[in-house]
Image (cartoon, rainbow, N blue to C red; front, side, top):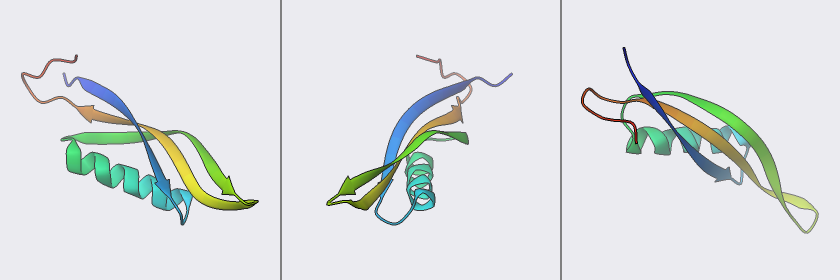
Amino acid sequence: MPVGRVTELSATSDQSFEDAINQGVSRATNTLRNVESAWIKDMNVMIENGNISAYKVNMAITFILEEGEQPG
């Protein structure tokens, strides 16, 4: 039976929430093996001078441990 691990990360985009999510997932899949899912925990905007300057997402990435790896 597979065992998963969860790691949290934040990603920011000056374009949109969707772009921030895509950047976070892309970074996670380039760094981690066996990424299975991403849970978007929250989304917020950064504001400068009364305008939205960036879109930020905090996400939990779940990946499956390979045989022999132990959750730590």
